[in-house]
Length: 264
Image (cartoon, rainbow, N blue to C red; front, side, top):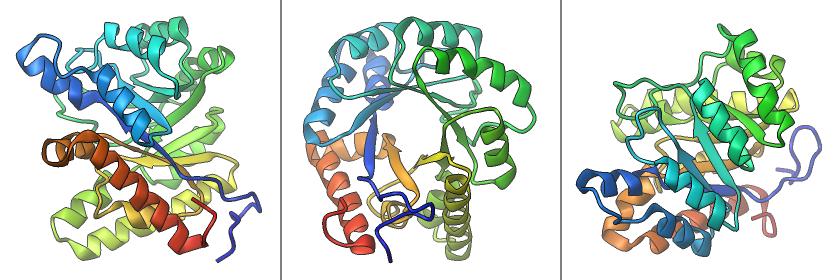
């Protein structure tokens, strides 16, 4: 396979964004200051993360406002600020002006983000919502299902980046539903190519593990993976530094195997 994408652009390094939300989840379960998500972010940087992702939820169940303040003050890699499309979150993003803002759906009753944003039904609202963020210099991404209709809508509202929800693929893999897994993976492959054909930068994430990351890392159009809960869980057994380094190497190996040496 050629080391170029379908639009004849060079295949860049696959970036790894490490989500530190669930370090804060553990801290908040008991209260106090430990484990410190800011320390986790520094460990992630040293271990090879290209960026840090943090989701400030309306109910502040894990990452808190002081965490965002501290991340903005101390990170040397970009912060990807995940948030719902609310006035409160927009104001926080505009105050901090992080490198990237990822708009995600949010329900109080969900344990984690359950699916992609419904962009097609709310194009006008979302177009007006993201415009000030883009004007402030934030790279805006939209977290969506691997669905042509949603990708087209994200493109129409002017979002330069989409992040494809990989949860259905990962769930099918871990539950042993092989046919469903392969179907979901094919959707992700096709929609990565479709998004790229529209000029969108394509990212992916949610539920990725050592066992599921390789096929997604080999999609030439995907430029960034965001991974968090699994890495925090693995840190219990091997340490956060080790888990991130192993994920970084797994991603890089997948890229090399697909496209040759010198790519990752």
